[in-house]
Image 1 (tube, rainbow, N blue to C red):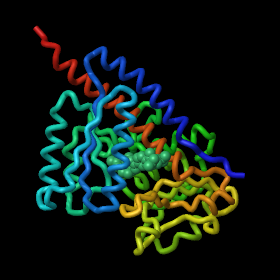
Image 2 (image 1 turned 180 degrees about the vertical axis):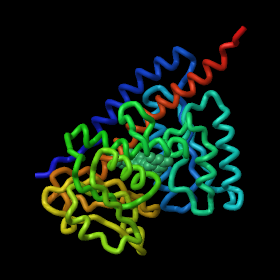
Image 3 (image 1 turned 90 degrees about the vertical axis):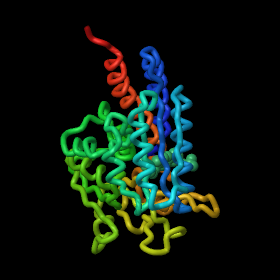
Image 4 (image 1 turned 90 degrees about the horizontal axis):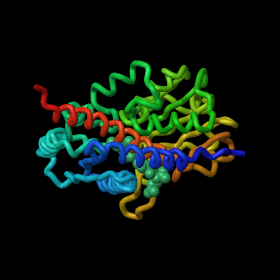
Length: 311
Ligand SMILES: Nc1nc2c(c(=O)[nH]1)N[C@@H](CN(C=O)c1ccc(C(=O)N[C@@H](CCC(=O)O)C(=O)O)cc1)CN2
């Protein structure tokens, strides 16, 4: 009988915690303000990213913060990196902006490394700037550090449900900058035996079949991606495995969600499983709120100290 790993508890707790800290920050004149930048003009990505950005913005506003969404997808490709850099520089300088998210994936013609290198690490809600990424190679504090939202959200869910990681065979499908890569590093730090599978892996099935925990973060559902599609199904896994589904995309024509994990067949064999709706996405958003509060304190320290004029 599968136990569903639900994100709403984390999400609710994060909102309550964030509301308290918004009040404290307002005592020093700082209102958390999140700026979200959308750059992707691919119809699938744009539909999905608009949905994600609106959900994050709604959360921030619900706890008393503010949110701005910048859509640059209609800037000509040859100018998009430059325009995005100009926007990031402006957001870095604004004292009222306390957190920034560059929604991923960005289009292949945009210089993503330049964007994240330009973003002020103090305002980096995703922990994806070079300075913040490096810190993952050291020990991390799940409760106090600004950590990548989805990986940290997944680890918080494991902790909440008492799912042991130490010494376990964990397969991460997908090696993206957002989830697969940082999460595999964090899992190693927690003494898991980690296998990362990706598009060029010679084979996937034997590793998935042997795993104690499978985390699928691909986002290429067969309904939308004909080439190199991916879906985790029940016959691929062993009895009693823990499964976490991360990848999902919105079909721009139907508006329908399609996910990495086939819930029905996996639920018949898994011991624990995240629902495609109400699982990792809510844990991700919970972490966005916590990270935004932390970046807001970082900005507050900089802004308040800059107002103190010494003798
Ligand atoms: N810069 C970033 N880009 C992206 C990130 C990220 O953390 N930083 N993560 C992914 C996905 N993502 C956030 O942007 C995200 C995924 C899912 C949800 C969510 O709330 N899903 C709901 C269902 C969706 C709905 O209600 O329509 C759920 O799971 O219950 C939010 C955000 C992509 N890029």
